[in-house]
Image (cartoon, one colour):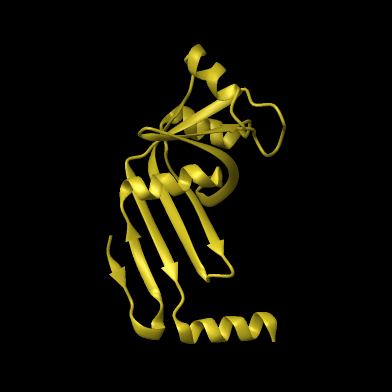
Length: 153
């Protein structure tokens, strides 16, 4: 883990692969980042983290096309503790594939994975966790006073 910043400037710590995936696993919610009609899009999704991959449900046609074509997408999630003024962010990047194995499909249907646009999931997309980047942040004391002052003053 690398740490940047010191004193009152705050800290930014780079997380290792496993720590990043553990945080992503705990969050269960994130964004799927992909290109739709040559423009970037970030769509909400419930996530399941498995060894080497992230899985989500979708009924969105553009996401299904990306999943079926093996497109490279990113999965991002983050968390903030407003009282400690700390936070984290994780980004997983990799190729997609549609889950078609009947045993896997049945297992995913029992998880709390559902598309945001509709309540019933028929399609699940797997993102291979090729690149995993995570960061933890903490504001320094000077920044704490500014944030506390603006939030409560």
